[in-house]
Image (cartoon, rainbow, N blue to C red; front, side):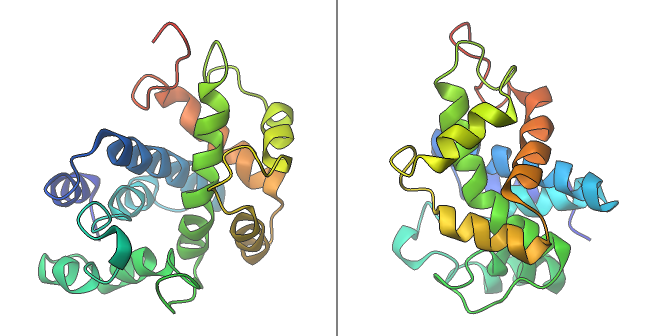
Length: 188
């Protein structure tokens, strides 16, 4: 099983841009919260979340085409590599998410982008972000327009959950780490 320590070692060897590191952390914390929701291993899900964009910095136009073999060669278990590959389903891979981990990663990858954008607009960042405020921004497709809301809705459907349910879990899962992800507000 992939450990968080190993995921950080591998990801940090490839990813150096601050915004990509922050994104990896956002997804990591959201995945930890989703693991708790499903009664799964929190650290394991966090590790997969942290490592999910392993090749993106070097190969943004060929995302996930340079992930599978290097990670397997590095000893990452095939089930974890499959989960990482599945987050690109319908875009850059044909690996359909089937497990709760895979479906969660597929969904929270985009969802955390909107959460981050929403939190950055608030004086206290994510620390006092409420679901109602998030949903208002989620429904405004001009806000954080690059985040694929249809994919998020599809992912929530795969999980048998609503956007509100998944967003609430992720927001609450990210709040304790506000300082680490730069979302404490104007007083950062």
